Amino acid sequence: MSETLQHEKWEDAVNAAIRSLRFGSVVVVVHEGKVTQIEKREKIRPEPTHIGRPD
Image 1 (cartoon, one colour):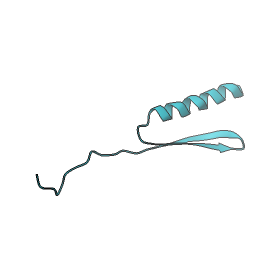
Image 2 (tube, rainbow, N blue to C red):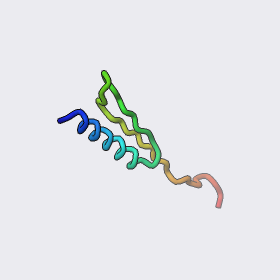
Image 3 (cartoon, helix red, strand yellow):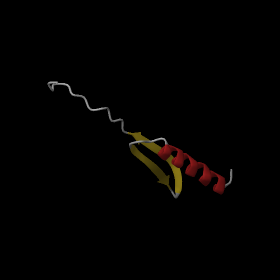
């Protein structure tokens, strides 16, 4: 696989990870000038509840 094609593959993967998140982060790990992994951390925020509050 050519280096340009590999670069496009990683770029597509990063873009897909970003688009799939509502809250969170995407980390690109580089080793010796090359992308070696992509980490996606997603935050899930529950709806606020009114437990303990009188109606």
